[in-house]
Length: 429
Image (cartoon, rainbow, N blue to C red; front, side, top):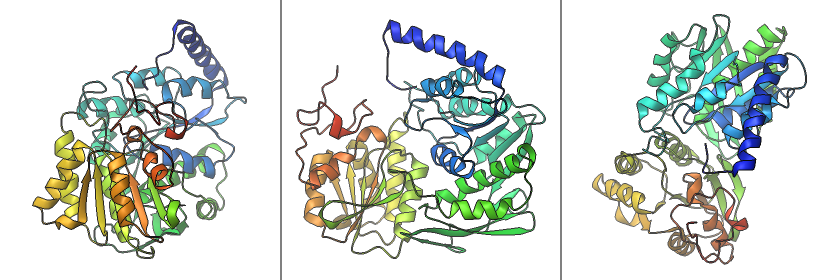
């Protein structure tokens, strides 16, 4: 749930819409794929929407609390296929979603301490309990698609009556697995054009090439394959050629903007934009992907804002990130922004990173100044931070635009170019 706090009239309207959505979705009985997780859920929903273009899908730009009833009321046909992304950041928020959404297939992509601070879910244990509810409600003839490589998700299998399908890297335990070895950098290729790897379904090797950038997409794609197969075979009764259809469609899916999208930036720079979300897992995978991309022109510079809403372990998590960065190769320079990234920088130095390779900036405007002195046309910048750190300001400054706001974080979700505080700086209301 976001910081949006509507007035009485709008709140009453939202409540009435929720009641209407409960009634309508029970009447229409759509076949529902529900997706949750600390990372990967939006990309998973997006990929599935391309694989199943006739499916209704939640708007990726709306808060889930308001999005779910809006989407439910858009169901037009009995037994229509629908894809719901169910994000949560409050205790019992999943219960509100499940009052409307009745999943037939539930996908859980991974667990991380996102929203584990006291203002949100409070602990990792609460995150697990909340997200697990999405498979606890499944019936015996429903399906739970779980990430076997995530121990927290793997353990959820015992809490559902549904048929469980695992995906991951374990050939013996997973219904769909990959031989892409991310630790030893084998059995996949990665460049600015995309990712190539194989997944295995029973005795079938499915060779895949996709414009989607990033090692994390391998996991998301396996989850999508299982859901796609179940829908094709069990719901649509279309058993022929679904593997080839999956491969052909995946080859046409381009990244969402701000989620590992490769973009042309100001001053002749290239931008690997991954600045909409950040937790310890996604940041490590993003940095690893960036370091492994061998076909990038010029220098590689990572600019990292803070990872938000981690809770009492926020300093420790940033220190862990710094240690990870110290052991990365093939990134020329790192710039960390904000007090928590100072902890990451200090941890990197303690673990052997050369001082001249890791700069720290107190805010995004200082970071833009440092970056402006370091870059040349043809260099590539990797941007990573939680959404409310608003890394777009960095590119605006490099582009010569006037930016006066140096807030480390603010609660506003709109793009800074449309913000009333862009020049004078954010003022808490």
